[in-house]
Image 1 (tube, one colour):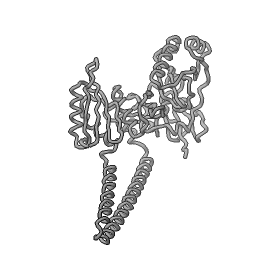
Image 2: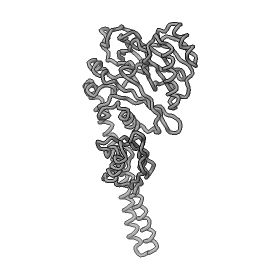
Image 3: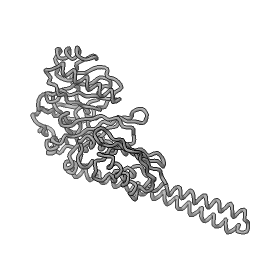
Length: 415
């Protein structure tokens, strides 16, 4: 169900913000323009804030997985590797959007709130934040050149969703340098297989015909200018995220909303527990009934050796099936638990896990360490972990890079 809200959107003018009323999923009205992000006097509806690129950057990565259970952990590992993460994932304001790609891969778009932006937006107590380009359905193929607070920003989209935003360092007056920076950004996205192609450049906002002609002459694609569309309230409501709020802001959400979330979570947990208990009870009753039937059959046919042997084989087969079921229910064999144990064994050293793969009884882990010695220490810690002793671990000799760091690969075979 859609609930009305007010959207704060960065204007193309320097330091100005547009306040949009969103009473339904299909209609918007511009209320006012202010010099700073503020709650408009004409509306008391909850706030959603669309952030400019200088306050919320969007990174694109190609990951060899589509499993939603590990995508956020892999995204946090990439942010750590680039020096963009806080101590933990909960203290890092970021949100992930995954787009399926061929061969089981996914294009991961990460929205990351800039640290200096947290203090500016926390007093407004918004329901959620999102980057400004996520307020629109972006076209596939063209790159978008927009204006935010008198700065040029480049947007790239795949399947209608933003995957990358790039705040240009070139001034608006230096159009040849702007065109060069746009071309280099497009080559980088194409080389990383984040975009299938670039067909044109669209100019959204107040661009003069002379600026469009200059960019058209310097770039290898068609260039066309068009007005910036109105924001899409349905997309804003669906894509806004409380994960982009600072940790204090997330904990200060309205009490009623927190109560609803807790109630829904408790109800879901109770339903899952009841379902699991019902299934286990049925399984137990079926096993008890089967055991009683076997016992009666054995008692009635105690004088027949052949029948006793057949019944013994049947009992042994049932025991083996139960043993297999018990092994499958062992939580130490769940991939998410295995990844958590491997991450826990990292300790405080400078190690980064880059790849984790679980295929049946086999695990594969690869990453980088500050030195080969650190890699061997991690291998020893994994082998000594009581929850990971379920596997026989092996590691090939680490590869030393020119910077002195070491790339390592480990494999675990279920005992």
